[in-house]
Structures are given as structure tokens and as C-alpha cells.
Image (cartoon, rainbow, N blue to C red; front, side):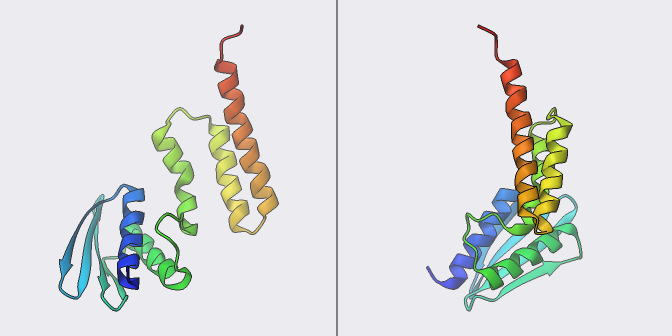
Length: 146
């Protein structure tokens, strides 16, 4: 698999993880992805030489795709990697999948992400641990007593 194909797979994997609607097609010397999220539409083209083009009007969707392009070009991340800017969406994804999640867990998770972004790895670890302990404690409370 060449660089262009790997880049295409990285982009496609990212889009699938986000749950965005998309279609793909070959256009001769490039592969094209048309992505839709809410009212936003963008196109990403990966050319056979590995060049990545992101097209579309300014939106959160385009901003995320531009960040993805930059991450691929600079870091050469793998398709299964979680990209650094994706971690900010974790609390919202948690709330989407578990609307009744304890607000303290969400708050600790948000604070942990802020610590991580500020380079305070120990603080991030403690807050993530506290969020995990709270979740486990809530599960234990639900267990029937013997």
C-alpha cells in the first residue's frame, strides 16, 4: 500500500469514527471523499502523489478535516490512532451515548483533558482516575447485596 492509499485510509477511518455521512469515489489520479455533517459539506481529495486537499466553506467540519490533514502530513499517524484533537470530543460523545452519566464524571473528564493539553500529565492522570473511580463506585452501588 502506497503513501496515498494509506493517507486515504487514515482519512476514511477518521470520518467513520466521527459518524459522519460520506461517499467516496475514484477520480483518475485521485480519490475523493464527500463528507456531510449537519449543514456542512466538505470534499477531501487524496492525489496519487500523496497530496491532500480539503475543500469546503469554513465550518467546524472543515476545521476538523484541516487538523486531520495536518496530523497526517506531520505525524504520519496510523488509521487506528486517536488524533490529539479528537480527545476534546470524548465528554460530548460520552453524554451522547449515556445521557444519564453522572455530571461529576463528565466534569472530571473535561478537566483531565484540559490538564493533558496543558502538559500536566500527572494532573490528567489523577482526574481520569477519579472519574473512573466514580463510575466504578456507581456500578458497585447497583449490585445487589448478598
